[in-house]
Length: 284
Image (cartoon, rainbow, N blue to C red; front, side, top):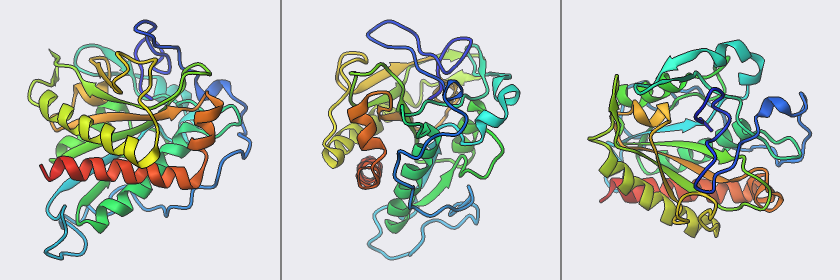
């Protein structure tokens, strides 16, 4: 997750929020407490780099002609490049770290592995519906990309929707998922005035379908407990010119949530919820 402060791996305290744990405080070699991701890997430009829209071209494809960008949070290789991800980049309203390592379960399953697995599963589902799907990274980069570049990828793709996939690192006992929406901000290169309304619509659809697919409940430790949180300190949102949200699929530091996040079948359901939420939004 991309966070505020000197180290983006830490969240602001307040409104019930807790500090995140960074992956780089964990053992260097994570133990294998998680199900092995089974979705196939492919380059970041998997379906969009050719410039062709859609995959099957069938008239019934509900997302034919739509461009979706999925942003798998962090990068499994970030921990090998601490100085590179620590450099500051301009997010419009301030300067923030390029990227962070993310969090992990207590057994060592990294957030960066989780986000790639769920993102790849969602890509498969969306492409089957005719969408052109692009990734910000597919485990094929040495680190990052930085948060400003992640936003730029969605902007340059003229994406109809962008979803950044994450998992939280709050205190044990704090459970559930939440969707982060862009706050209306204007400063420097940031101007979200045109995307706050459609991003909220995307977030609401995502919240409903994710809950339905996974059986998860909205996190009660964030905001008002609605499962929607509005933030103006995330470069990935501040610099976006297209509808975009983040989804925190669960809390990796809670044993019950971690049991779900490390389960292959649950991750497939999570991907289904994300894909359906995007589909609902794009078909409105």
